[in-house]
Image 1 (cartoon, rainbow, N blue to C red):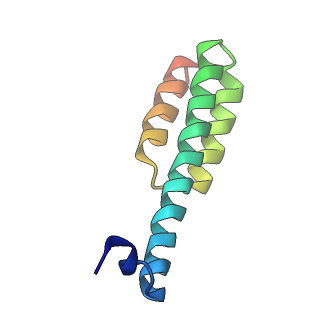
Image 2: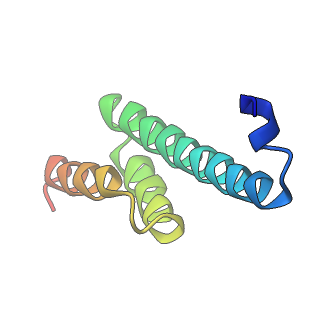
Length: 78
């Protein structure tokens, strides 16, 4: 059985698709957080906070977003 034979089974394809979906979801969250950091770095703090709040609504388990959100609030003096 070769590596690609493993993915011929429908069940394995579903599992692979789940992994790919999770990876894409993580990348979207990461891209938004990086955008927020960029705004914070140019003193567009309110835009950064807004983006991070949206990220936390969509991806509440993304721990890095929580940390960066807290740091951004502190940066804003809140």
